[in-house]
Length: 137
Image (cartoon, rainbow, N blue to C red):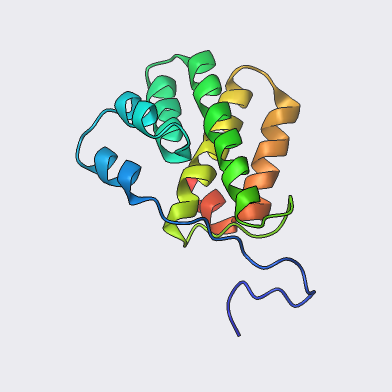
């Protein structure tokens, strides 16, 4: 039996299509700003921008970047058949941009005192991918 097999007949895991361009550019040292400009639908680029802003103390900016990445990810999930719930496995690398943006949104929401959004996003991350919640903290 698979580790994340759903015995209750819930929705199958959603696997976003691979788009290696943004990931390769970021790994090669291209700035997240340049990657987001070239690939504006990349949740990974927006999540990286959110992380960078948060690290330098620009929490509101981090929140805005994370929200953009989160919404771009929701769009991608829906195009991939996601119906608003169900697993989005961390183990499938193309899903990581969305999951990182969701984590960054929760973190920034907490930092600006948006308790309800922090709790909602944190729970959404745990429900989507317990592995991502563990890895991202």
